Image: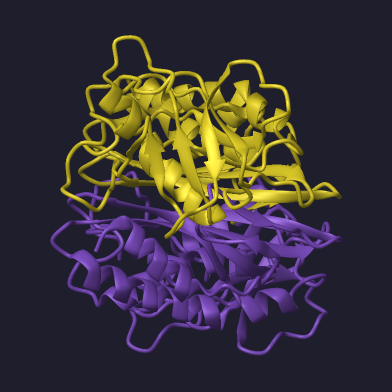
Length: 286
Length: 286
């Protein structure tokens, strides 16, 4: 299977219908996209690297799903709808065509489920599997949910349960994110653990946070729920008087910063901003 | 240097000014971009992989320049202006901070030169250097230069000279591309060699091509000018009566297809669509 044949396969898999604003898809130098009036666009790229974010022993379709789901989770965190994506993939020669087909089938299933068109990408060979997904989403003009809007006395919420085992299927919270537009004051997705991510949200908003309880995934240790990465749930703040959305748990309250903003306490003790850091000792992300 | 410190460095390097439609840059889950009315957007991602597209012995700033210039060349090929980019980078732990800083300095110099804002990206560690650049460009609505518009009797042109030595600095032809809007009937950039790329343009346009001469880079072999990759010049077609733009050479004429479209002849003999294919024997791209 040569590059031309793979591109042809992907073009068919992507479909020829102009969806989500895509006017020209795979096959030219660039994809052409027509924005709708009254919308801002969201851009995000997220890479997954073999032995860092996944093992080669995982099913190729699951790796493909993870690759796109991580970027979709960021679109969800801004309250956006996903529109189109570009996928750059590097694979070892030895894995060849079967891997590529299965990888893209997993990826495209998630793309179709979320209304995301495959607009293009790039293919190359190397020793390890590497994939970078670039995602384009859309939100009503000026309405994107940012990290820097949390206010004193806002309630803090998370979706789902935290501390999920590594390698579990990521479910991007797109519908929840969209439902928070005009309600949440700040929002982000949990990719590096509650402690570190809530610290980041508080720094951006120049406030502190008090956490009283955390919804823990069944069987998970508290340590993992607080400091483990890859939960891909939404963390957001909202005025406390607004009704709690379905499927989320109030975990605490935003408070005025007493010193350096970003201090998070959990059940009365200081929660250090410790989580997964790609540039600390190079262990498997878990 | 941990991830947070690197992101902070990049945020400063990128600048805080909202340029090219960027409303929110590095530091949140997604970048936020406000499209201008009356424009279509162009999306492209291009990856460079160590030992495929470059060697580690190249200066980090040159690798960074190549990484962004390849994607800029695709924007040029559609007649676009570049607006923002996202950069995903994976580096070996051993190269560390000095490599990252120099790589981004080279990349950002090219970004600034071309008016491209750095909107975000991703960092990870692995054994090899890997970079994927996602580029967002813009063209007047409906005016993007595609591959599929070449018409019988159109003149065929290329910019610059072909067969450049591998590893040479890539100069994306953005100004030329923009000057061809409303004039060129088809356009693409030469990344896999004239023979293969002109074949692709002809297939897309359902025509054949006759090539009479090729402007050859000093000292290059004809074989390299016809079949070598990485020239990153523009290949385009235009009605023959329009004036030849500055810095380009007419190389031939589009003709009616006699059989299967895409046949290219050179000085009377058939030119096989042979060029660089990433999925054929895994040699260094040259």
